[in-house]
Length: 115
Length: 116
Image (spheres, each protein chain N blue to C red):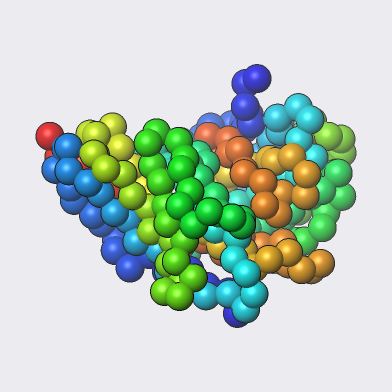
């Protein structure tokens, strides 16, 4: 298995532009998580899906952020419009079951820079 | 409220020496505890977890961790450090499952540097 696949690896954009990050979880995993990592705030959970349904989106910073999981093998995180403070590394992770006590498998992340 | 603390930003160890990366936690019920490692420009990788049972948990790459309920600690240990163990280590905790509790609480991370 190729693991959790994220694209793009790096994204540089200008303030105000729309950014879409993509994630392909491990086949058979039914929980998916989007995290954001910054030096200042560490790892933050943005949203959690189980069986393609958003269960907890309380970590989504504001309405500029949205996430979808149209099927079990694909998820997107969209930022529109993007702002410089959104610059961070965004990770997608998946797990079996509910993800409550199972280990998480992380992708390599998307390094986002908003100028 | 749940919380986790990694009191050391950085730990320096000579190769071949034992290493310890500290983690303390606070939960209202029984904890689920995890350690993950992050190598540069990579995602986090699972090392080990404690859910229930034996207090000494063995994980990947020769690491182990001891759950100490009285001290609310879950320190990561390895008997003999390798230069390749140099990385960022994260401790995470979740309270025993409650219907509305999905969040893992992550520590700030500890940078482990192993010197040859």
